[in-house]
Length: 591
Image 1 (cartoon, rainbow, N blue to C red):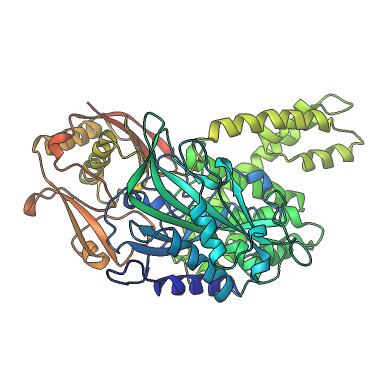
Image 2: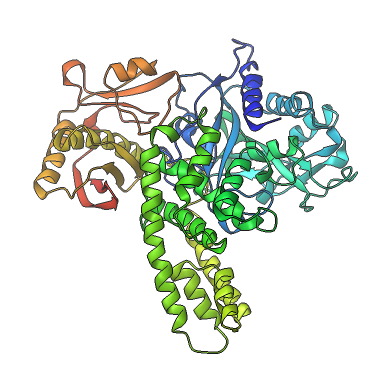
């Protein structure tokens, strides 16, 4: 079964599955949210299907109902060094179905089981399942265990595991959280072992059902949530590989044409060069999807991750002997795979190609400087520190340093290099632990105020600087707004003051904040502003600030917001700076 068929089968299956007996409606299919999350400041990119649904998991009413499903495009970089093995990817799609205060454990588990064994025809003896073992203050997840057993799963293929394996959340010190149950497929040769060993890496996780059941309080206790949610996630690429009998995710049609293009460009076969081929294919695919949302490479935040992906792909291209600029050709191969499902790739083709080419040219200069650095190193064994400097500062993988050393008949202190790399990775993990943790955004009163103030600020920016201004990203916390927008020059002091004055004028007017649900087409006809490159569901929420002729802002948004602008206080821009090419960044506070 090809990935496209799997995606369609999943969505069709859940669209026919009703929830509570009150209406019996099936899950509504919603489009993928953007890769740059709108409602979760804890991450740089959307890392799971639940992130675009943050407000609804917190209790906001979703315009499409209580049961929804989709295929969400995701980017994860926490395991970037693992990319190239059998299962790890930077860009992937997550199939998911959600219950927003409707059905719970029984239905979620039964439907997961039905889809795996009946729709996908996966033999039961190749499946195994884990549930939460409980801890002080939280009972053992006997209910989930017994539901699996009632479906015919033998106890030998069920396992109780602890918090590290079968518990989700909260994102911060407090908030929604709960146990989960995970589903595994046996990828080893022959039949699966009679007894499930979760530590055996041949058991690969393919699906996860999270039950948001508790709220963790400031005192560290757990109380039952009024609205209990189900959040599931199935990896499209992993399951497609399993169904096609492949031993790795790069063997499916989601990668084969990209790999063929790399072979054509490099003049080398895939066999024997799997790692560089896979890294190039994965990283350029991920970069293509990120660029499609208007984000450009830079030295900070999301732009830095994008830059790292492109440069890492280019340097592996050099290892394959590719001398010319090649990333647009690889991106084109990726676009052809997804053109019917993600039209934003084609719609932003020129921008994607231009940014890839510019980054390749910049990196070529770094490579030249790296070669000069290498040539100045003392004779003899190349120290681990010098090898790591080439890796870190000039983008040379250890394999490239090794080739250069071999040409001169020299050796590398590889153990010293690995020690430097280990220290670097520990620092990176510590620094990114919070940034790349999936979770619900803070929904405090302070953050809600900043969310509403951001709408006023965007409207003011568009009025002062022109309607071509568009949102390129935001990070909203309880302390400040950080907002990226399209604009090709530095704002003047006068323009900054005009924006501040206009926002404060609307705050002082104490305008009402009105939420309406309507068809997406109608929302745009009424002048609502949306996020660049974002495909919306058929029905959306539109937040208007002001009434009738006095509306100053109208945006498609999930919320939450204050009731009126008078609650916001005094708005102040504290910094305006460049974010990336053609994108400015504003930091602002409420006093």
